[in-house]
Amino acid sequence: LTRYRTVHTTAGATLLALEPVTGRTHQIRVHASDAGVPLLGDRDYGGPRTLVLPSGKVIAFGRVALHCARVRVLGLDLCAPIPDELRTWWRELGGADDAWTSAM
Image (cartoon, rainbow, N blue to C red; front, side, top):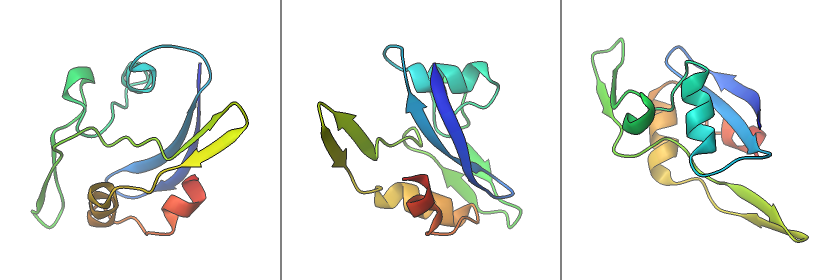
């Protein structure tokens, strides 16, 4: 089981907040692919490795566009900053920086 919430949508992508509830390795990636929306850069599960923007600019994804920003374990609430690479891709896809705050 993976819970999800749509945070923001652009013409080229959707920023999701995902929460794995039960499962195993690659669960989020498998669930996204099975739902017909594989993650950007996820070549193992059918995600596009590149996108061509209406301007003609090509965005190449050198990794899966997935980041564990927050983990709650044994009463601890741990956060990790969003990598610059993901922020840059999101901006190039027309997303606003404040969407990341809403995702958390």
